[in-house]
Length: 113
Image 1 (cartoon, rainbow, N blue to C red):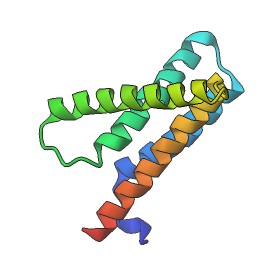
Image 2: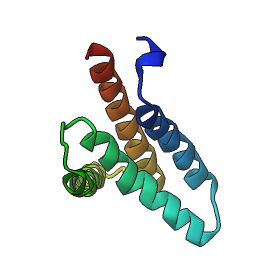
Image 3: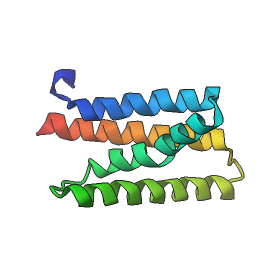
């Protein structure tokens, strides 16, 4: 895979997921931690997954990102709850992994095209 062919948003989403998840786990003041958690848990995975779907409408892209982010968070949290392994730290790490995997899938799409 040639990294020069990757778009900046794909790389930025992957790096942001890793950095924000680490910052969230280390601890921040409460208002900043809430913003970082919303980013890691909803916005970043949703945006990474929405980039896998070809769409030209910006409003649809925003709604798709929010919907996919919330749906993924619900699925991950429910699965962790039923497996009795739920913790907010595990949820943050899992959502960061989902984001990175979606970015890798997008990177494969970009290199293939």
